[in-house]
Length: 446
Image (cartoon, rainbow, N blue to C red; front, side, top):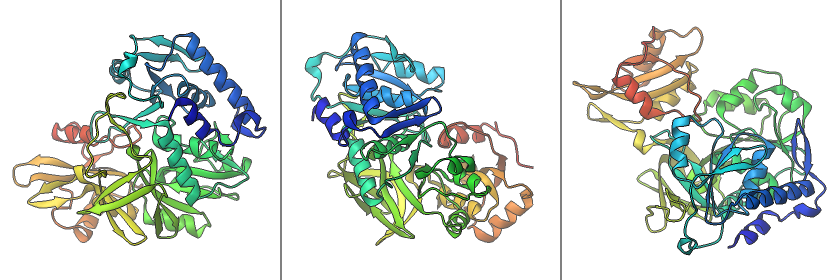
């Protein structure tokens, strides 16, 4: 598939002739026809600056209409575009720049700096644009995950087939656009000709009172904040995922009439893999196949990534065409329960410890706002189970210990409790916490 074919696949609603709104923000609205015009203009500006198919563009992203314009323009000009956060720390940014040939220095104006010459065109194996995202880094240094542009379109199509977008109302841009969750929000709206709403907080009831929201993707923290507010108008569809979800939160929201759809996905599949289409009834997206081996989820399908690392020679390891996700789950018919990451598990006193199971127990009991279970080196246990947490107001250390003694197995019970440290990252940085625990760099919970 070529660049022009990928664009036609995305532009199925006829952008150039569509008068309906596409991008809506405080600075003004753009119709699909206007979006087509400004994307074409931005692509021409990129070409005039020397951007070409053999370049790798490092593209900082926030949650702004200009970022959508930049990524759409880039994928019509260059062969590979790697997305990163506009808030990327300088150390990581410097590292990422060594992997790119061009860096966008001005997101609003579309001005970039050339870092080095592009790849020899003879080494490029295909012309379809590649779009890369970084892994969350929750298990170490972020990896570059490469997709074809068409993978995101297949993912969006599959999601919209399971959960059709309403013909009225906005899709709220609620997640970072440099990750697959945010990109999924954008592509699901674009291929359906629906409007995207920017600049409005997803965890503020006023957003839903002022605007008709057809669909929003939330993490549990955002939903929790909304449950503390009066919500006379609810969004029509809520996709929920990204972190452990308290059972009490799900029950509370559904009792208040919220249409929740829990979802499981991963960057390597360009967002969603499986979604709860109705209560406790999960389905794989139509383009995805799921299997289980020893409790580990295996996936394949039209949105499966090209690989990690170099966009032109990406590396991936498949098992007869299947990707072993490293995610453990219980799957029975249409029922699905996420258990945890295989690489987060550890052995304590000869017993396997699944951190996510313990974390979910504390969360479901309503005792903590945040919790991470990690191993700490120990002469007796080999690795002892410890907790880094932020207790709910009024919950003291003794109550946490009593709960653990009553509800958890001996090897699962935290042997020590540390105070939570706020982190701006999308996901918990477990390796960092493990290092801090073992270096005695965290304060005790008192």
